[in-house]
Length: 392
Image 1: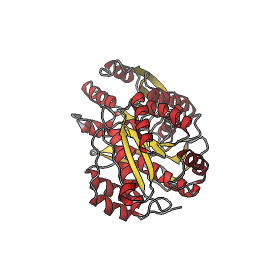
Image 2: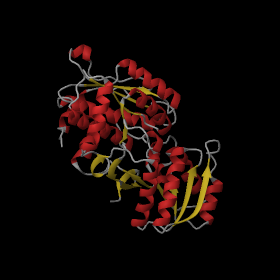
Image 3: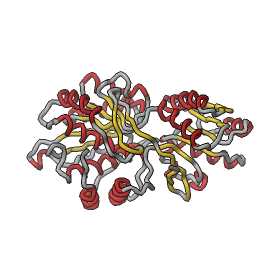
Image 4: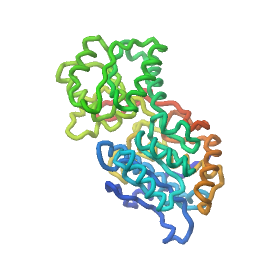
């Protein structure tokens, strides 16, 4: 397993000014300026719009990894160029961004960030035979049926099943209410898997209340049903924007259950105008905890905070691991930048199941199956005093 000298990346990150302006591409290393061939890795995600917190975190986390790898000598002796395109979390715009990156000369894709755009782009990369690894596209369809597409994060069903298992194993509660978005593939997919595993784990779902994208501001009915059901814990397989409204409205009605969510809740503390004290005690299952004391996490935190002035969230760590997975597989495959991206793709497909990444996300190493899914263990975190604290 390759060990990268992360202190070099930290020093470089402190010296470099990395642009994360919305809608702008970010290139590091230029083949024109160095005169040497480079690997061109593209990335797609929302730099603007409701899910910008996810996309910018992915862009930033990937940039930290690229800078570290370049400082340590690159991939197989070649530097990386990295370019990020904004898709506003829209499938059509994601396909347009993919074509822009192809015109740029992209050879491998880290993306996309959210599920619907990722699924749309996966069909394009499969047709083109472009290697793709998504840091955070959780929908089953984003990877399933595409031998060229891998993911760093857990799929929606995996998040749901592991959440039920975690709640039961830790003895957090036995009576569970669920509030989910039935119009959203991410939310409904997690809920379905959670419900199935909850039964296996002896958990009782006493209320399952849905909302839709057309009605996601008033949650009083769902909360009242959860309260009347006697739920000890409310499971929220939703995004942080809706979660912030639920927490505020529950507080207004005097309902104070435990809350548990998945990676969609990551970003809750950054919602504009939200009273973060209401998030105290909220738990979520995530493969990354910024408060972890291991050397890798602390070095990543330091580099990220130096470059961007904030603590990294899971999406940044997913992207960081995604870039390092590309590096390991590329080294395993022995690829070079002069290869056509279709040849690179086939070699990367063969190499991915052979690597093990000692990354930031999950407990222990990360491996991949031929189905593109990662094998790793998640971490549970709880919000205390405005910060994520490990529960493991």
